Length: 66
Image 1 (cartoon, rainbow, N blue to C red):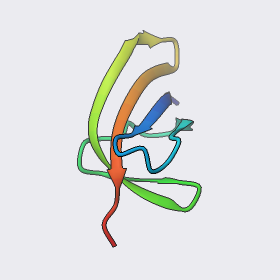
Image 2 (cartoon, helix red, strand yellow):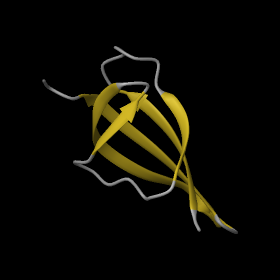
Image 3 (cartoon, rainbow, N blue to C red):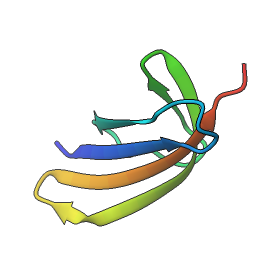
């Protein structure tokens, strides 16, 4: 099983972001939950080529509108 190691930045600075391990590859337009807060993914960037079962990604997000 692939593990996606994901660094997350919230574009408007309203949340400090996070580093998470996910079991699926996030995609633009998807919503991600960080400690009970929902964020819309705007951008997904591969940080480096996959290594073994790990893939390294960076996400840029904004708060999800209620």
